[in-house]
Length: 485
Image (cartoon, rainbow, N blue to C red; front, side, top):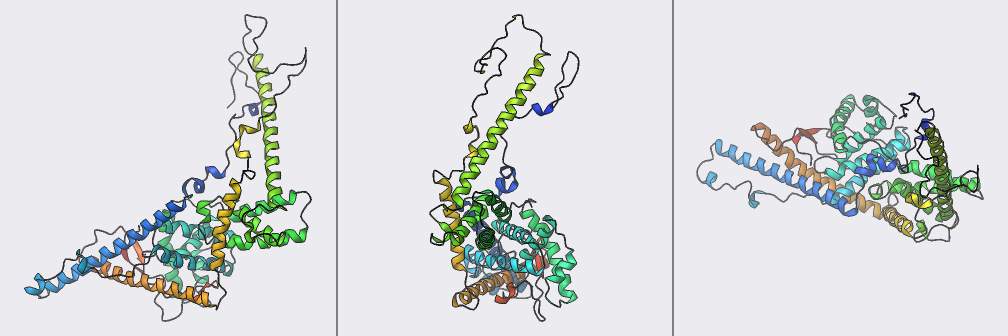
């Protein structure tokens, strides 16, 4: 804000002189992702366990309510006397069946199966990679507070991908999107059903995301790192640079299947991918993924150069601010009333000139004013963070199996078993909700809809198209209302 001088009401012509004395804040630290979507591993486990237990409780209560309503109707239809007297209390343990509830790990297995479909589906729709990355982030955030028991990952995956096309400014009409995900020759009914399901789930997903759609993706951070390393001396040969860029894509893709973005910053994940690529391309004799060391040929020199440039920029900025501040103070002196003493008082701690008419010697810059300039690569703390992130990505890489292998077949059978368990629970829940509506009940309902049972996942369904063959139950068919967890 400009400063008014009461003597002649003139305005200082240099508003640039009024620069905040506080150091600038990093943009990422002010984002919703940093403030609301960063957790510890214990917090992640607690959120998922709470969502799973809440869904179990609601499904069990729905079945118990249906069981009780069925017995009431049987008594009303003429079952009198002893049959009615010996009916079980629906809230008792005897009235509850052993539903095959999936565990948190079972749900994560199914979620990762559908997360793995997103890259292929993104390519099939000719969408940019960052759109698929945002959709995967939305899907992982959604299932922190919701359960697969109530919202099947297939519907949420398609909804998140459609939502990402809008939030990442690559818009596509809903009808076009539904037509493309319906397979090679989808029927009109299948397209309409897919569009209706996405429309119904879209607000639910947005609400679960707290309407915070901005995603600070690791892909952009990695692109920035790869641009920065071109400033190193001596420069990296172009062939090696392109090879390094390609090698960093594998750990980047694997990181999107993990919880890394909830535990680490995008720059830390990107640096982990760069270090892994360096260990593979530039230093093949080093440990795979570079765990336990900072690459001596690229990562460590880059961090040193980055910190040096940051400190130089901070010192230069401080000198510019001091210069502007002195100009501002000199201009203000001409408008201030003269002191009774002809000799102005010298402020304590202000450096003085060497002689008459000499320019005051500036104080040496204080590099410790902004602790954010230190990248912590000398004391080992950054190395520990990168090792934790690399170990998480390496674990996910160990789960990856070649198509047709025994491990891939076993994993597919596990996914199918989890899906069957969820369908069994949904069948009980859906029948319970239907009974409640027929009898005017439904105190537990919250106005939200659940998805109907899904077709069994297919191993070849990850190629980018969502199949909708004839004879299948509509993939997007919804049941009646229920809580969301």
